[in-house]
Image (cartoon, rainbow, N blue to C red; front, side, top):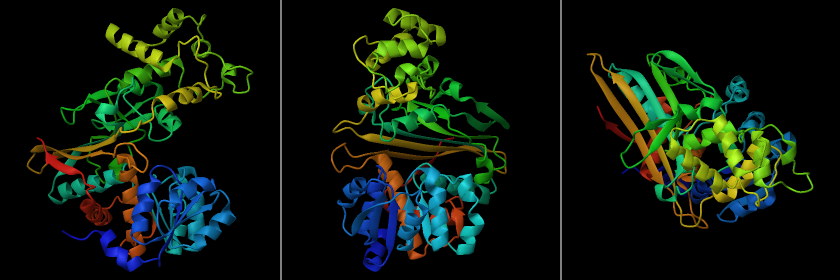
Length: 467
């Protein structure tokens, strides 16, 4: 078996290569660990020094600094001292990082999507001779690596991809999906809920289709991958550019989306109908109020109900949404009771808006407990038409479970985002990725090189022809 890039580089890099990592979120730990073990001289930078120190203290040749990425002078000074910067901070700050890197002629790696602000820097990046590699985590990242692989193979054999479906889910392992949503937070609860408000666009049977955000959960459908899993799937944001991105202009259907366990969409749809995902401020939810209201009073205000009595609240909810049947209604109402939204005793933690106040309740209730594992499922489904007219369906599937929750454990999501980022960083440092500009692993030439380093580490999508 070919040596991994980690094995190859450990004796070669020593501390001669310096990397600045911006951020300290949960995906950073596997990234820092792999780079530290490869002998890279690491600096972890966060606005809050103690967060950087907590991460850096776990690894050799790793130090912590305080840094505000919106401070251009401080950012320039920090980037000037290293060979490469990894940006794992909010995507809205990536353009600042890239501008500084271009000024200092330093390379950049991120796991985020390229955005318009970054793409405006394409000519400057090429002129400076720097590599700014994006979209190298899980989704985006690993998904690209195996999408372009199969598409390239089919095209080289004279076939066409008439349909492309790609769904990914970061979920609790089935045995840990023990709440009404069948979901737990491994990252920002607010980010998860906001994503449920996004409109979706995709290609369906040759026509551009769209689903408004408020109707997104109603569009979710059962999705079969393996018999042992009860998945539903719904489209995620705008899939329409991927006919061009993946070079499949012939594709009549192109959908990239999200996987959740059955029951999730119906529950979220009810929360949407109730107004609980609204980001509009409500006076009753103002944290400056002398005394926080009970959940029943808050629910009354959010619903616009005439009473805070549970029966009246349920009647108002029933007027705002439709339940599939009596069983579904009882399941969802039981879930709302679990949340506590009918309680005449429990007082809310007011955060100004219904969505943020809901987050304050969900966060402690839906975090991973000790011993629980997370789970990632990613699958591409390719509909292929060959030159002789024969049709075939292929899948590429990744299934991964995280370590049981404990101090120092690594989740599947963190590993599958952090390790591809680290491997790509090592490849840039070694000169194995030399493409310049604002790039992503969307070309088979680049994708194949990255796959060759990930697969020996057990990060791989398994391909199968199913019909």
